[in-house]
Length: 219
Image (cartoon, rainbow, N blue to C red; front, side, top):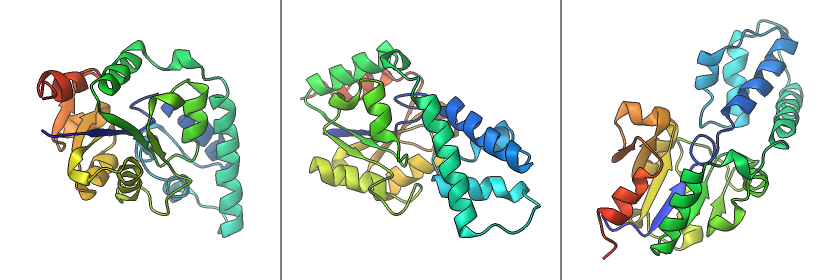
């Protein structure tokens, strides 16, 4: 496999902020008297903040909300979420992730982040990962979120790589679908790996080394 670049999703792959998203959405839902649980939260993985709100509002039975009110709700959720993110440090990135990224870079591969999150760069700074990547494509730079391939196509363009030279690493089905739609190879991690829809399923993050370095021997 002639992969020259690896594009990583952020939440659930490089860092784990799912609990912060859940707590922030739960607080907002509780204020509006909307039922919200872990199953509903699972449906929010890999989709935009605005789309997430629409999913939560499926259980809402109050007066019709205006676009302005919905914007106020998503802004409030993000403010709560950012307060949780403020607590993040370099300790929130596992040593396995750091070692794997360093070995991939040392092998000559280009690395990028492709995330729908508008907080991507903030999280990378807080966790000390900002300098590990050659490019960052995030929610502030795109109009369409996963499963649309825009975020990954942009990451590939920023790296100057053709799609067939890129491998997308994702933990959400929507992300795997986006990677495939972008014409890229895909590696599923975590929840996405259970569906066996990617080119590769990763049990551990470091399995990337077996696929990209040990197996290919980089030459």
